[in-house]
Image (cartoon, rainbow, N blue to C red; front, side):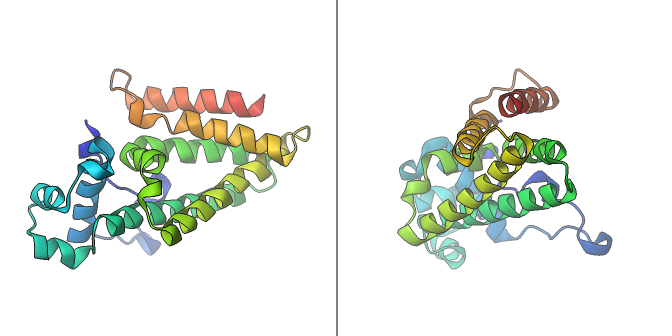
Length: 209
């Protein structure tokens, strides 16, 4: 499957039935348009895609498209800000679930991020290549959320490995993200389950020393 066909999805652990067994929220037309836009941005580059391209791919006329989004910048922000928020919230939740066991917390963080990266390679590609296309304020917001997410990993690593200071743990955390966020560049010759196993094993090996 090409990046143009990849969906914008929240992290895998946040999907599924809602409270008290409620069904997941039905995807809106806005969600569908955003999914198409993100796939196009990831595959062709932000500047390689016009609003007309997005409208044509979504089967939406110009006025109807602008009813949902003010422009490409608004689409990019709508894709990246919620994902950054969900990663931070999910990371915190997995650490809390692990209680006082930093090794379990680290394994949960790795599982969580690997599943996200495998489910959302188009979003990963946008983070890697197109974040600087955003205006200053949403870009600052995303960077702040990313820093907070990294610090959750840093705190877990320094608790698990007392020989590391914060700076050293931060280096390892960013290296781990490099491994896990390689999903936009992985081909389909290895099935998804095996890709997840390999990414988890490589990341844990790098982090645990």
